[in-house]
Image (tube, rainbow, N blue to C red):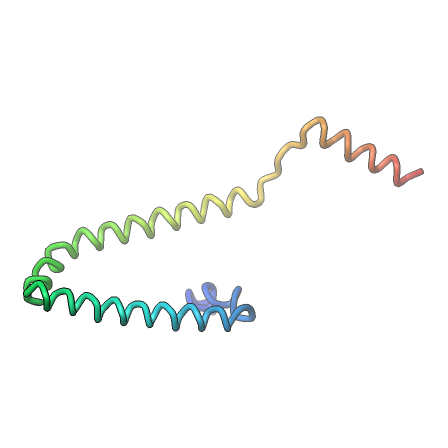
Length: 108
């Protein structure tokens, strides 16, 4: 029973917990400060929050379409990289010559 979360988290669960924690804390603090800053700016400009909510509601379909498009593009790119990983490539003449010379040297 492989869930999406286990596939996402298992490869990195044993590494860099400290870095993950610090990045999460820094991002949380920055988002909180950004929210306070935005609230202060809105108060100084006398902009009502209900006006922003209406504008956000109008922009929401575009934001969702953009998000879905970026996720789709990322998943397609990831699939293409996985397919490339297992393809064998032909060796150049120079690489074949060097490999043969190494084999001949180790036999003697």
